[in-house]
Amino acid sequence: MSSSTEEPTLATEAQVGEDTFDPAPARRKRRLDRETVLMLIVPPCLVLLVFGGFVVWRQTADLDSVELSQLRWKTVFTLIWEHTELTLVSSAFVVLIAVPLGILLTRGRMRRFAPLVVGFANAGQGAPAVGMIVLLAIWLGYGFWTAVLSLTIYGLLPVLRNTITGIEGVDPTLVEAGRGLGMSGFAVLTRIELPLALPVIMAGIRTALVLVVGTATLATFINGGGLGDILQTGISLFRPSLMIAGAVLVALLALLVEWLGRLLELLTRPKGI
Image (cartoon, rainbow, N blue to C red):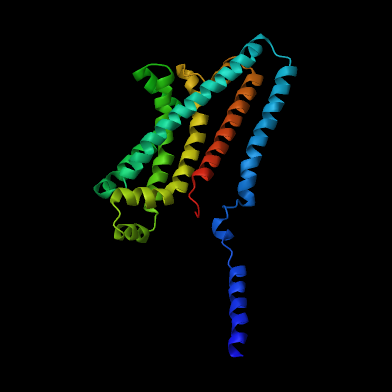
């Protein structure tokens, strides 16, 4: 009797255990909170809406010959591409220089040089951007690559500082645990420190992207191209329509680049962080 009574009980407990155990949460993908979803949806919709308004204004506005020359669609899209090219090339150099340098400055004896290097990057960003661009142009010559060099120097600080801050902010016990498991220094860096520091580094890259987009308008003063041409013409010839059009296009490009940076930050963030 006792054995017949126990068997259903054990079977019932096993069944309850199977019903209660749900592996789905372990496999469930990371869900986005409401604020993140809004930040991913609103900016591109706003860019499309405002650019649509610009298109309608451009097609219906009564423009003189100077304004028509600067706001021809071929000219506008050429300047947008030049501005984007300046931003992408400069930002690529910023990442290629600042991230490895930031990692190096968190290693061993190189830590002592961190304040000096960060101070140099801070000086580069603190100096008036137009003055630095013009001085480099006088020294190296006018053109695209001088503008890229200026923008690279200007955008170094956020990425460099965030790389150092992100790596130094990793819990030392995790680093020690990795070394205790027999990991090499390179393995600890690539498998523990960098993944945990990546959100902070990506935030610095996003900040640098926005800074570079805005500062790239000054490249027009050294024949570097970009949307600054529209602004410069509007200011020189006192055409408010050109000044407003150039400012709107730069603002929309900056908003779009910031959105792409936020999207990239979200996609590269390790799960669980």
